[in-house]
Length: 138
Image (cartoon, rainbow, N blue to C red):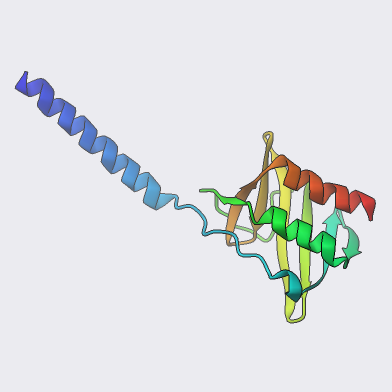
């Protein structure tokens, strides 16, 4: 009986070590940081090299508000843009002091927002659909 208890304790300890190792090896991205609405002069949405510019503050507020619900994932962003086999929408927030870029896309029936070299965040389908519909309406 003591031997079984000892083996059980060893298995639990190894499982905890594995969980700690995986948690530290693949940390979650930091929460998404978006520009303040009042700092955004316009947004440019790009799909397959076609740019559309939008400067309506109400729409910009809706997009920022929807993207704030993004949740960090353990996936890492390691390039300037998502893989080429993914259809994505590039969002450039045009600010007075530069541009802030974010990509949104669908992959395996899940929706993501990706900030290059910063992190990949999960978004919900309504957020994706909102931004896609704005692009199609412009």
